[in-house]
Image (cartoon, rainbow, N blue to C red; front, top):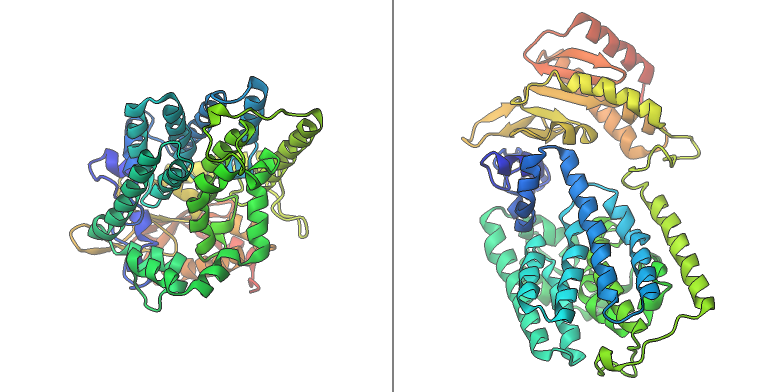
Length: 504
């Protein structure tokens, strides 16, 4: 999407088309000119386009993500210092940097929600300083991060109203957030695609409606008219819900569990996740968890400033701050350490620390850093054989390295629809089968993909649609309309014999 925007096609991406409702539900082909704004309305990402223009690499996005999250912690410290002594402020900041919901999503794929901690902590600091012009600029940034992030501002508005700190501001934030979400989801995004009504809302909240498509109003009515189902979804699955909350509270020594402001400011983003279906929304290692983080930490700051349920309606500056006892300090430091250990363990989802943490113990599945370093050189030598303007279909982990082009899709797709409506097959196919072979002994998903991709490659070679131009250490490169290179084909057949019959 960044590459397309830089080259005159704002927010378009053929990759997002591969998971759009057009492909998933209507069984149509991916389209080159698919707009990401129909999948997720994220105009804030375009703010960072100049950085990508200076360093046009997928690595730029990972660096940006780390900068955003790191800067969020620095702003959090100054926010805490508005009420607390330096040491407690420092502990809160360290808690943030060791939180599972911060570390694991940061060491993952690039995602727009990584802007939230920096944006929301900055907004809260601007509110405490009464820098209202900056407050509203930051509020606009938060709304532009993603179509549903307005719930974060809505929650803040609820807190400001019921705490009586800024009741008028609270009402205004609630009104703006609701109006923005309804307008964007129901009027703006459908202009780009039907993903919201046909895929996103149904995937997360389809249990509340009995039809294949739905608007936000219909989903809300489904929730209101089915209170029993609503309560069931709120607490189920019980074990994962409890584990999710404990994971959020752990780095702050469980203070958010008893802090009234934490429940209010993080309330609606948390409610949004608890009421949705699917295991991913309650996975603390995934990006969705970041929407809950700012509210929990702000509530903890206010709790340490002295605010509790008994004096909730008093202004924080008029309340006596709580003292940190040596015993609780030791407990808090223990919680921070445990949280960091769990956070590192949770990076197994993204495999960011694959060289440190085995993906499986029994059977043993692990890729060492020297091994991957060698493979990277071999893979890069194949990637250089693909022209920069050629269309490509690739396996997941090769896609970032090929993303700087107009036409790119994910295997098993081979066809796409061009902006002029023509259907064409990609010029090149590249697949890292070694990785699937290595992981399939322990993981069914990789085993199924290895079987599927192997059958696909054999089929397109047999009907002479594509020929093998290179094969190195389990990575195969095919080109449309050419005869297979003899040495490459021999290497492929040897590899095919090695993997043999893949058990399902």
